Image 1 (tube, rainbow, N blue to C red):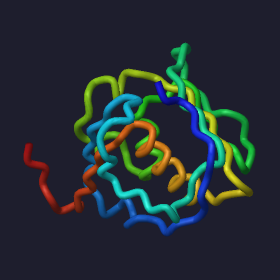
Image 2: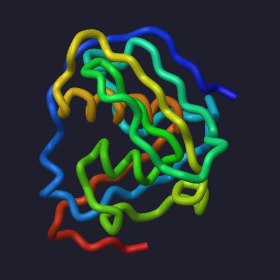
Image 3: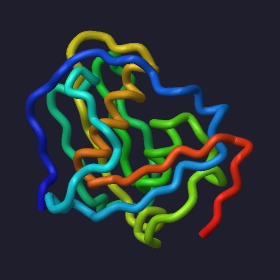
Image 4: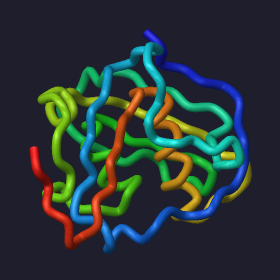
Length: 147
């Protein structure tokens, strides 16, 4: 089970504003190294220096210590992490197996320096894509999902 990462790269541009997206459609393979990551990960995109994602033993959700170089969440689902990473509401996230909403994780990550909130979101997007082998489709607000 892959749950620790060391190594980092720095800053990247923000994707199109979340207001333009009606849905983030997800499909994920829990902690597998198999398959390509469909979401493009630019090697120039920001990354946490060190990050750990582990299954959470607890039931409650919490935000960790407020430190400018740390991102800490306890007892959160993949969908909750995606909501923060892409700055969208829960109803805007479609698809994914039931575990993406039901399974809880503890995440601790350390950034180099003091990233802005948008840089933190970008680092989280990269981390989630790498660790969960995410396949995301971002749809414009005026498009309709056909499944």
